[in-house]
Image 1 (cartoon, rainbow, N blue to C red):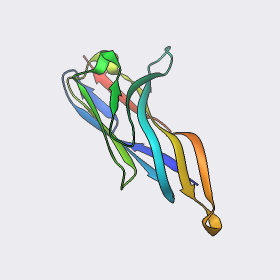
Image 2: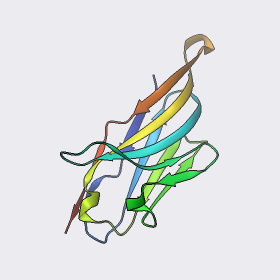
Image 3: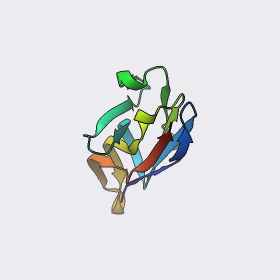
Amino acid sequence: QVQLVESGGGLVQAGGSLRLSCAASGSIVSINAMAWYRQAPGKQRELVAGITSGGSTNYADSVKGRFTISRDNNKNTVSLQMNSLKSEDTAVYYCNAVRVTAAQAMGVLHRYLELWGQGTLVTVSS
């Protein structure tokens, strides 16, 4: 079974930095795209940043120039470096993986259309 496990959330002062990491566990064969989403209290979940297997990235306008997404295809991990944090960045951050192929029993390949992590809370104090 494939799971996404996030780490790195916490409390930070405005202007500070935080790094989130997400690791996909299981017998991963390939992952198409990975991304970070966030959901603030009372708001809808929104895309923060995404990255393809080839390394192409995209960012929400609100985080451009402050956040950097990266991934290690060999380790099946994705990270989000967050700098110059603002109070409005406070949210639960979720790791997302799209079109994940994993090997299961007897070598049978299984494709997951989309997976989500459990979320990690980032709180930025002003």
